[in-house]
Every structure is written in C-alpha cells, then in structure tokens.
Image (cartoon, rainbow, N blue to C red):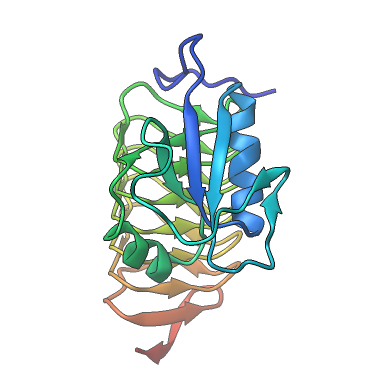
Length: 214
C-alpha cells in the first residue's frame, strides 16, 4: 500500500468536516477523510432526495452558522459548480488528502484541494484552490495546476506541465512534459496532449486534436 510521505498527515486529534454535495464524488471524499480517522459531521445538498451520505444526514441548503468549528469541502466534481459555490462559503476551508495518496513534502496545496486514494503529487508542484486530483492520477514534478481544475482518475501529468483554471483532464489522459494547457479546457478521456493548448477548447485523440472552440 502507498503511504503518504508528505507533511499533510493529520495529528491525533480528529478534524471535523462538513461537505457541500451528497453525490458520488462526496462518497469518495467521505472515504478520504475516514482514511485519516477524521469525522464528517454534516452534509448540505439542495437535492432533498439525497437524504443522507453514508449515514450522515443531508441538512439541505448550506447555512453559514451551522457547525462553525468544522472545516468545509465542496464535494462536487463539476468545476463550474465548485467555483460558484466557493463564493458563498463562510466556513474555514479544509483539504482532503487520502492516507494512501503520496504527496511530496515540497508541494504547495491551496485551500479546498482534494487528493484521492492512489494519487501521486511530486516535488515542486503547486495545486490551486478547490482542485481535485482523483483516484490514481499522477502529477509529476514542478507542475503548476490552477484553481478549480479536475484531474480525473488515472490521468498522468508529466513534469513541468501547466494547467489553467477550470480545466478538466479526462480519465487516463496523458499530458507530455512542459505542455501548457489553457483555462476552461476539456481534455477527453485517453487523450495524449503533445503541444500547448489555448483557453476554451475541447481536445480528444492520440495525439490530441482540437474538435471544438467554446
């Protein structure tokens, strides 16, 4: 089993979390905090058909004054929705790093970052606010990842890659060394990016080609 060799391990005292979102990604994040023996104390989701998240009651619309001593995580995979909700938050923002992720001690993680089981983030990398590094994704050395990015399961970012705000790197996609990916880009699942990409494009294929300008 991979061990988290970074300074991001928790102390013996439990951290209490609240989530905004009670869908599938929230279930994954619940397992992340459980891996550190931390506690999910509340969930907020306006979809009241989601009555609970693995036994934790859905309290409906987010309330600023509820559970004031807990840290909050936006437990939603969609980049646009995470950014919108982030503007409403009053709680202290937490980070979620699975105990079976590997995050080097010389990595900079901004508030709200989520690093899921099996992910690797290597030395010299910085990761922006509310960005997700999902299951078994790899972010190699000296990468610069913007805010509200989602690096999907199994994706690989080689060394020196830059990724702009709001971009989605699809499952099992590969970004070759030193490529610069713009903001609000969608890289299709399994794509191999070999050159820089501008803002607001959709790319697919091997090598990746632009199929749409937003």
